Image 1 (tube, one colour):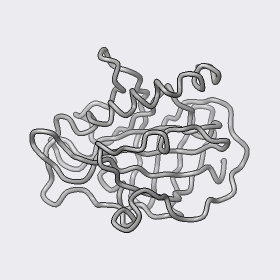
Image 2 (cartoon, helix red, strand yellow):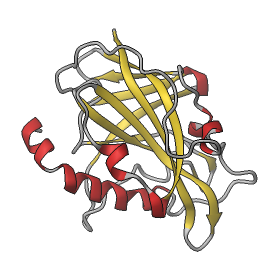
Image 3 (cartoon, helix red, strand yellow):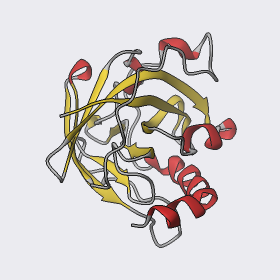
Image 4 (cartoon, helix red, strand yellow):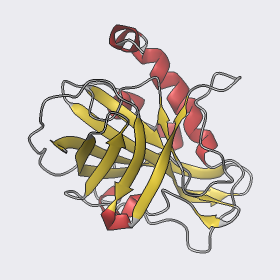
Length: 210
C-alpha cells in the first residue's frame, strides 16, 4: 500500500467505511441488556474528552496481527479486511466472536495517520469481541502487536456514540499528523429489522512502542 495513494483516496475511504458500519451488526441477535454505552456520550456526544498524551514518532507500515485491551480482558487476533463485491468495507466473519478486522485502506497501527479497526458487538452466540468497547475510559491502553515484531501502544482519549444517520465521518476517519487508532462497533438501540441505530467509536493515540 502506498501512502500517497491512501491520502488521495481519503474521501472514498470515508464513504466506504461509513457504508460498511451498517453491516457490523448484520446477522447477529440482540443481547438481553445491550452493550455498555460510553459514559461521556450522554453529556458530550460529539466531543472526545481528555488530554492528548505526547506521541512518539510514527512507525513504518506493518499490518497488525493481534490486539489486546487489558481493561476489557480483550485479546484477539486481527484479520485484514478490504471491500466486498458491493464496494462496502468487509467485516470479520460473524461466526467468530473473538476476531477484529483492520481496514487495509487506512494506516497500519502506529503509522502516521488514522488506523481503523472494526469488530462485531455480538453475534448468534452472544457478546462478541467489541461488546464492552463502550466501557473504555480515557487513559485506558490498547496494545496492537504488528507483523514487524513491534507493539504499538495507544492511550484512549475519548469514547463516543453517534447515531448512524449523524455519523461524523470526517472527524472519525480523517488523517492527522500523528499516529492514531479508531476502534468501531455498533451500539445504541436495536431493532430486529434495522439492527443497531448507532456506532460506538474509541479514539486513541500512540504513546509508546515496544
